[in-house]
Image (cartoon, rainbow, N blue to C red; front, side, top):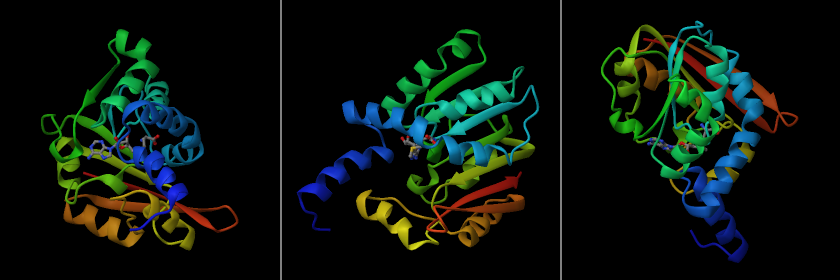
Length: 215
Ligand SMILES: C[S@@+](CC[C@H](N)C(=O)[O-])C[C@H]1O[C@@H](n2cnc3c(N)ncnc32)[C@H](O)[C@@H]1O
């Protein structure tokens, strides 16, 4: 795609949403911690976590959702995973006290090859990240969940509003997945009881999507 100077600059900055890198990446992960707050809070309200739950946040970015889940599970343990070393460093900094207390660890890794044994987690979450995942990543998430475990996906855009296209135009490789396709992909990966919720925002110019599924 041919871009003018301004579009090129925007592209270089926002490409860091897919994989934060360097100084701009550091800035972007901190910005995401703040700007994703409302959609993350809404999404997380769909997940009931036991106080001692073993949870993993996939594509954890700057680690604010790891923090929120540590608060929700005072006797539990939360792992954050991200393939960007910049995100891993930011998440570790944000959750340093919980890491010291042995309640949290942050791992560098790709969702395509999750480095965990089968049946490890009570819940897995994915906030604002599945847009960038390789195809067929859901069976791996299914594998690492305990039977009965929950998978929560939260997206600020699902391609159902014309305004969503602004993101796919500036971020290479970003894929918006519709609610119907997500449900279908999750069932194909072996998930059951797939429930969805949507919330209109910005006077119906945007739509948030939350999907919860059980192993
Ligand atoms: C838009 S950010 C969202 C970060 C965080 N979840 C939030 O809500 O603020 C997407 C994150 O997913 C990570 N990510 C994308 N694809 C990934 C993959 N295949 N494996 C691991 N992490 C991935 C990126 O590095 C980035 O930190």
